[in-house]
Image (cartoon, rainbow over the protein chains, first blue to last red):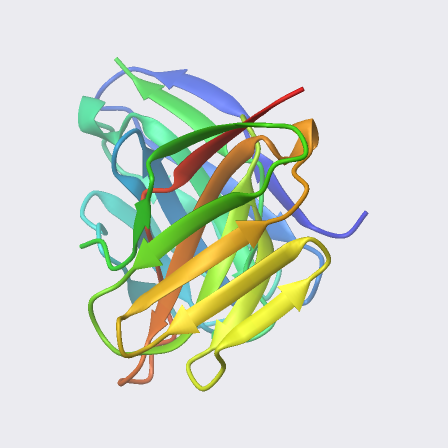
Length: 112
Length: 113
């Protein structure tokens, strides 16, 4: 079934460690996004990419980096994890940046 | 910063009843979208309404948009237990070249069998 695959589904990580969340889509969508979802705060955009080779900062980019080497993959890296980055992370994609978004099922990340 | 604000935060109804959720936003938009999220899953797109549209239907869903009041409503008719989920509105703001969505905090709908 076509869609978005996120890995891992959950992770417990020690503070200070580096972590990369993986996101792959097989719909040949141009745009991809990373959100974090926190109780009481809803979804907030971390980084986005309108097309392969380009990225942009969202609402809460600090402490995170992304790359978009090809159309299908959009990894999110936490260079040095901190407890405030404990959250559920969702990757999404859309055919173009002004079209409805398709979401993965999320990565539940706990930083201790 | 949150653009959309859903109201109510939580809604509990009986199966067969209609459910209405509202969304208010602050700045001009290109379109407004509604998404559903089942517990432990990602968001699923339900319907998109453009700024020049006033009403759209999709099955049991009816969405209205009032740009003068900067508000939208999502009506689910003849609700089912399977409609239990969180519902989010998201706005694509007008102006600029970056078409990003800003999500509200959601309404938790519980449909009791």
